[in-house]
Length: 133
Image (cartoon, rainbow, N blue to C red; front, side, top):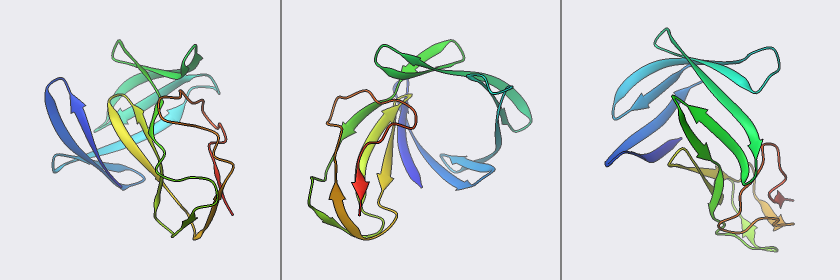
């Protein structure tokens, strides 16, 4: 998956290479993510350097604190509607977190049903956003 994110005034191309590698503007980083004792604190290893990430429910949905900066996950766009036929890999929802837009794609061909979010909504971890049947 590829994403474009803005860090300060600079746009970066981020690509998920595999479960343990991420490319940022063509530079490959080794990454690992683990939960700390089932808490909302996660340890992220990037090139063997550890960072703590806090993920918790807030007033506007799930919030993330990384390196002292707080981010909120929000829906940017929902380019599909109830009853629409979609192909495998078609974009269903675009979410934004930490100034990065993430496309959620259909895992299979089918029909969209039960769209429960709209652009601008804040969403929670594991919240049911829509279905493809």
